[in-house]
Length: 410
Ligand SMILES: *Cc1c(COP(=O)(O)O)cnc(C)c1O
Image (cartoon, rainbow, N blue to C red; front, side, top):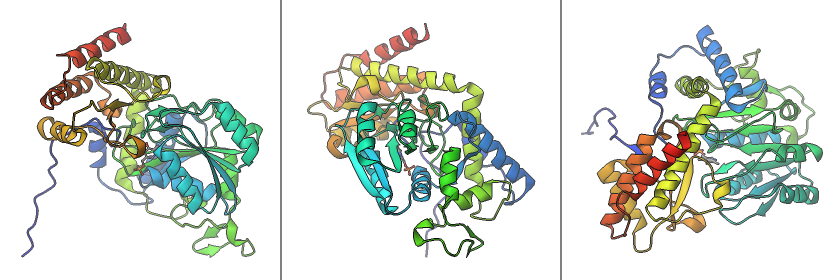
């Protein structure tokens, strides 16, 4: 006999890792709203509203602003597979794990991929990126903005103009950074950008906001056109053809655009979630939300330093919303994380690659970029560190974070 489990009943958790994070309560409520049909006027109106809201989030006038159904990497794949023709040269500056992901996806899109690398914990000066552009002559530059694996935030404001000067299409993965750090799609000359909901936007994973400049749309539109399974331009070469149906941005644009050509069935509950994430962000104000992340991040940083812990990476380029903390000598990193989860219901993150076993990553994002969440996490971390024999100043974390909030608000 099959044992039927009870209804879903997750434990109370405060998600303070590098993502996913606890969603805004109103996002969870939005997701439980009733479903409507794919072409119900309410549905198409909600799609249009969501597009308009995300133009505000990205700071763009791009008509081609929408959400891809799937997690953040669905957005990355849609952008790269639709913008890259087999054999195109693609330049990927790598400063952490997600740079390697962009290189891998570009490789799968059959690009000729060139990478440049910098040490983990650093970002690229724009001059180094320009030098590589001149040498490689890529069609596309694919660059992560905030890489949670190292906590670094790559400055992008001068990258767009450099790309425009050399005729390069500029794509960026802003999954970890959007909403918690500045992003100015139009002002910075970004041609394509993608994100996810589960970082600073304060939703669950499963929807990937994307925005495309007119130049990017032109490239997408220059690919072979397929309608209702029939190729429209029979003489196009095989390389003109986007090697995915689900991620063919030309088809996705026709579904979201005025023609409303059937493609996938837009994931209704995720659309509600994406809409609510953008709505609460714009209601609070984009700058106010970024400032809230800045303050929470500064307080968490001061707090871990107040506990006597070292912070990893170039502090002047750290994202607002995540900090990498060196695990003190003698403290078993995984056991301490498990104690935080089991005894306090608080999740913090482990690390990848060269940082594995060396740092924890603590996030302050979206709904959890709040003073009470910061202080609770620091108090619990102090207790756990003490339990594992680390000598930490009593109350040092909470006090330093409280001070940071007081100074930051003054
Ligand atoms: C977290 C993160 C992702 C996550 O991708 P998913 O498919 O949503 O798991 C992608 N890119 C960056 C830079 C991230 O920080």
